[in-house]
Amino acid sequence: MFGYDNKIDKSFNADAVSNDGKIVIEIEAGRATENNQFLKDIFQACMMFEVEYLVIVVRNVYRGHKDFEIIHTFLETLYISNRLHLPLKGILLIGY
Image (cartoon, rainbow, N blue to C red; front, side, top):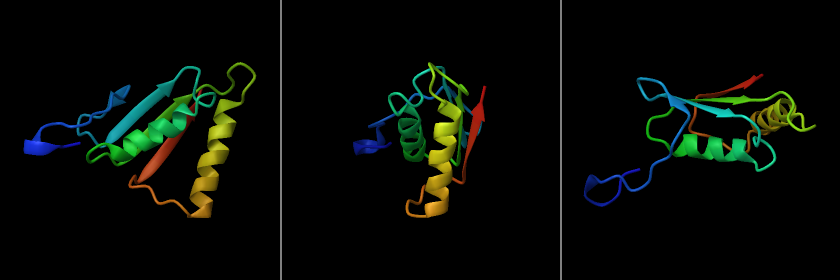
């Protein structure tokens, strides 16, 4: 984000960004749901300049938690409810 005198005021670190800067990839090895890291990933991608798509990669199951299923249900509810409008064109969730 840009602050006074066009200097960078706030920035975020992503695991990967496409060459054109429109796609952000976040890979969560373990704490995707335990600390609501996936929500932080969504928020940060929304705040990043000109980002259009977010890819979240999570474990299917981590320490007994069904991380992929939990996040999938959350994203589906977010989309179906139509109560919160994100500036992203899409979010891709990948389980491994």
